[in-house]
Image (cartoon, rainbow, N blue to C red; front, side):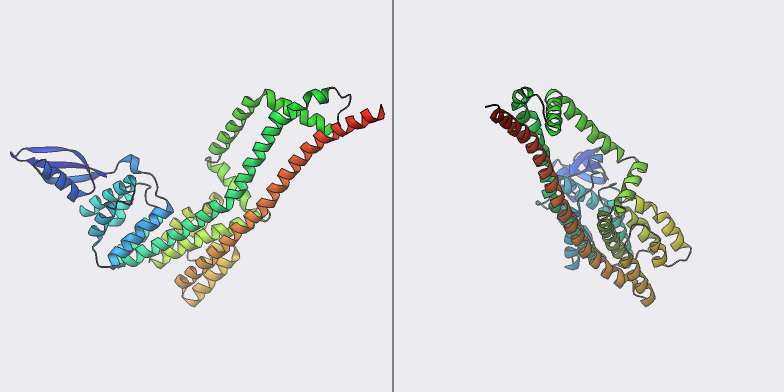
Length: 399
């Protein structure tokens, strides 16, 4: 529910004010009526706890329902009221929807009502609705936004599902090594100490096992501190810039990441441009959806070149991080006078390529991690079996 500041008149004519939670202004009116008070005016409050961004899946569903209701002839206010009363939504979602509805009922444009909630709704969605308020095609824009975020949600789900197996393998590797060093190797400690000479591999393994056994807590704390340091280092702009720049220049993986970044940018630019938003505004908004700081920083020059009269294909061609296929497609669209159609076409093509790129990255990671696991286990087995075999050979030679 949304929170409202209200002024109301009691049954004996006294003016009172206060704060009350309600789904929308009509709900607030009904709640006050039950208390024998008549609502005079109300103002919605944007609570800071609501400033949590919606996921792509929620944004897609919200936009799709708005587009469907508007297309069926229902007014925007009534459509928003229906969504704020939807029992299938979480309490948090209904609270946000109720706040947006209350703001729209007070005469605030829908795009401004969403923008007032801080980071709940992304700039892409807000600006597309703002453009549709001028053109009068809000239902079509809402459905286009729904398609945009549905594809983004599918891509995110694809990435998560594709990386799940490598994550499980990584966890298994760490678990196996911890068990062997912490439990298995110490079982052979007395046997190995009685031997006059041990192979180098065995000495290394026993040294590591002893270190893990006696400094187990310290190792856990050290690993946690490293993870914490890495987490905060990523938030430093210069460090993030360097990491993102390095990522797209790695062999094989860099090329695949470029495809993912290009697909993300192409889809956003296509959605914004076909909604009637000026190209400079499109670039300013789309740059923040790429997900790579190194590429995003280059857009300062891209926007400056475009404002100076350069073609979009020429400006984007200078960006280090996009594949040339998109640039060529944009150039063809400019020459043919159908940039909007070409952007939509290249966005679809890039999304297909990005899904293939994700599959290729996982295909490279899986055998690599299996090979690493096999090498570790093999090294451990050699370090254990070789000295045992040597001891049997020594016993056999002395009998």
